Length: 184
Image (cartoon, rainbow, N blue to C red; front, top):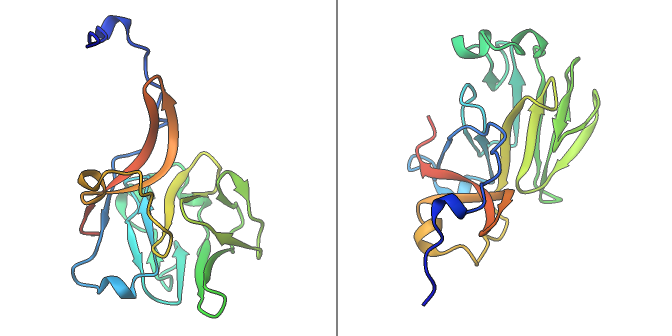
């Protein structure tokens, strides 16, 4: 039997790039069958959202579905860069996909790539959404129709939503996970 590796001899793990601890919901108030996607927060000043409507708008404007007006958001260095309607997420039921529409003056990014004002980008499972700067990571989009990774042990997947790979260490890969729970 092999000896355990002393901590002083183990290889250090990679930096996590500032991903915040987030919680996600399976939603006990919304039937799971009605949820077609989720926006899970990477940045705690934004709420995680179960997507059930066909269209959502996000921005500082009071008419948006999701209004950026919390005290934490208002003190963010990016707050003034958010547009009245910064972006929309729209579900195309006929073609069975969701896309993001950039309506901002200062940019909406998916996985670090700028979309461009009045342009659309199809959202794939685990897509990362950044606002006003590709370093301002806000959400991870989860497509509830995507197949779960069968290599994840049930003891983990029952309590966590396992997202994309964010690093690799000496003993395996590191994945972004969200605790299953209520979205507030």
